[in-house]
Structures are given as C-alpha cells and as structure tokens.
Image (cartoon, rainbow, N blue to C red; front, side, top):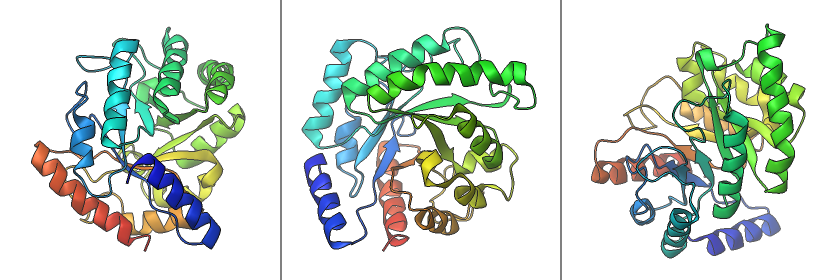
Amino acid sequence: MDRRTLLAALAAAALDGAQPPVKIGHREASLRMVGDPRVFEVASRIPGLLGVELQIATGARPLWGKEILRVYKREANRWGVQIPSLAGPFAKGVQLMKPGAEQQIRKAIETAEFLGASVILVPSFRDNCPDLAKPAEAEPVLEMFRRVAPAAADAGVALGWENSLSPADNAKIIDQIAHPAIRVYYDLDNGEFYGHKGQIEPGVKLLGRERICQVHVKNEEKLIEEPGRIDWRRAFSELRAIGYDGWYVFESRHTSEQQAISATTRNIEFVKKQFS
C-alpha cells in the first residue's frame, strides 16, 4: 500500500466508521541498513510494512546534505514506502543535556520537513535524562523544548521524547512544557528495562492519546507474540482503548536481511490480528 492508497483507505474508513488500517513501520537501524537507501526496496517486500524510521546523524551517510536527502526521498517514492519518523538527531558527542542539542534538533526539524516525516525521536536515557526532583537540572531541558516547539509545529513535526522516566513523570513533564509539538515517543519495552515494572502498560491510559505521538514495538530478538517484558496483547488493547491512531514502529533485533523479512512479516500478522 503506497501513500496515496493509504490516505484513500483512511478517508474511506473515516466515512463509513470502519477501523482504519494499522500504520506499521520499522526502524532502519534495526534492519541493519543505516545509510543504505536500499532499505525502502527491502521494506517494500514485507507485506503490510508501510514505513521506515530513518536515522539522521549515524551511519556512513548522515541525513544532513540535500544530495543524500534527495536520494532517500526519491527511493522512498520509488518503492511506495513512507518516512513516518526520524531518529538519532544528535551527532557523536552531543546529547540532550549537553551543548549543541538545540542546534541539532533544529537541524533535524528541517530534515524531517524535507522528507515529510511527522515525528523526530529525541532520545534521553539515564544520566542524560533530567531528574525532575532537581529543577536546576530539569528546567533548562524544558526551556529548550519550549524554544524549539514553535519551529517543530511550523514544520508539521512532533518531537517525540523517548526517555527513561516513568509514565507518571512523562505525563508531568509534557504538561509542564505545555506545547502540542512536544510529546512522548512511547517505547514500552524500554520502560520495563529502565525499571518501571508494572507501570508501562497501565501507563498508556495515564499518558493518553494527546501525549503519545508514536510507539516503538519490540521484543528483543524474539517475535512480538512470544513471552517477553511486555504483554503486547494487553498493550495493543490499552492503545486501542485510548484511541491511539499513530504509527507502530518495530525496533526488533535481526540477524540478516532474510530473517528480518520473515520475522517482520510474522510480527505484522500478529499486530493486525490485535486490531481485527
């Protein structure tokens, strides 16, 4: 399904009240194809995979120059694969709580606008994630997000903050920033990994549709349907219940191109069953 067909299907579903198609993508880095525009051709061979989340600042060919951006845009259009989001906005040595972060986020917004991506994943984990109990540590980050939010909104982009905070702290901090362009990129598996056990699936309802801009789906190297840190059947049920209609982006580990195609095909079949 290419972009035009997807938009037509979404419009038709809205008119007849039917469940719209589930928007499923895959992270380029997890496909082990960072810097390789052939990723769109590979994605087109996976039934039901509609998009690829690209890496900006990592890989052999970072997505900064217009020449490489034109190549990626051309290949995405050629294979009918969308670019819903961009990840990795920071070059080596730059992190959210270090100098240079704001400049690189602004640069990433320009890249997202050129490629037609609607979400930028902004990572912030552990020591690079502000402690809300320390205003001197948290306020500069919140102020930076407030400064870049208008530029993101003007470009039609949401900055999806993926961090190691609990769902409750994420809700608090997004409300303190108080701008619709700054939202949560919700990675449920990461939430469990960073110690918020038992809070992550209920955290979907706590955060609600308005605060979540995109969702990562993964079960390490296993299929999504297999036992893992997250009960994905329950997680999808919670996401349906809040009316989340954004992209689900796989971040599964793969060992080869063929294994990635096979496993992702199985994962897509599983996800679609949860919405049928």
